[in-house]
Length: 156
Image (cartoon, rainbow, N blue to C red; front, side):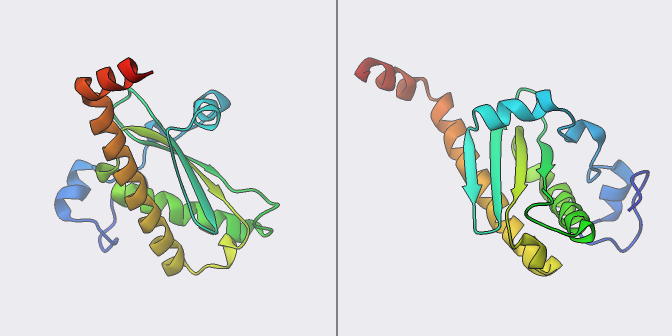
């Protein structure tokens, strides 16, 4: 995987995307250290899950979505499988990053994830990304409405 530029023939890459670099997954789009992860774990705004994945997310003020991965040896025994899961997850995020709002996302692997094929993993991730985007869109419109906030505070 070359991060310096696009290679022709990659899925989802158009010539315009390659030249502008809009589909890159840069260091700024990653959760790197504990201080990046801890707010998401402490108070996630959104949670979506299925049998093999749990996605926690929290809104940020950075204007970009960021991704963090937690793939433990306890849940996926072999390093080859752990690395494959992380690679496919990063690729899925990279291709859909422009449809995901400005949130910090932590993807946690559960048991059985390593047994899915790449196509099955992509399909599961796409379902969860769509669910996450829908939840984030609903919350954003609710938070942005002053009348809804006022009604909620006056009832409390």
